[in-house]
Amino acid sequence: MRKRLITPTTETVRSRGEGWLDVESAAGVEVTSEDDDSPVESAFVSGEARGWRAVSGSQTIRLVFGQPQV
Image (cartoon, rainbow, N blue to C red; front, side):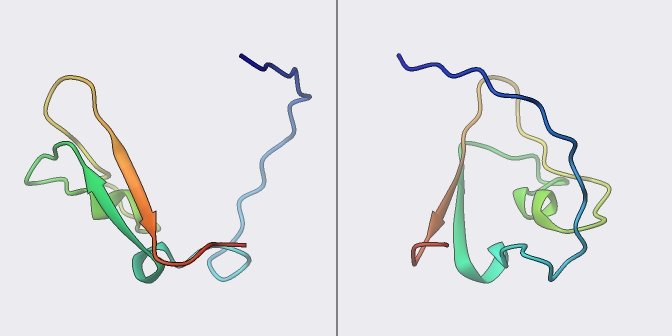
C-alpha cells in the first residue's frame, strides 16, 4: 500500500460552468440500490435538497464515462 501525507487546502465552490463536468451527459451511473423517493440523479443536481438515499447496508456508486475526461 502506498501512502502519502498531503497538506489540506481550503475548498472553494465554483459555480456551474467553471470547470465542472456535465456528468449527466458524459457518464452513466450504476448503483447497488436506491430509495424510490431519492434517486441517485438527485446527488448530481446542483441545489437539489433530497440527494441520494439507498436501502441499508454497504453501497456502491459507479460513474461510467463514455470518453476519457481531462
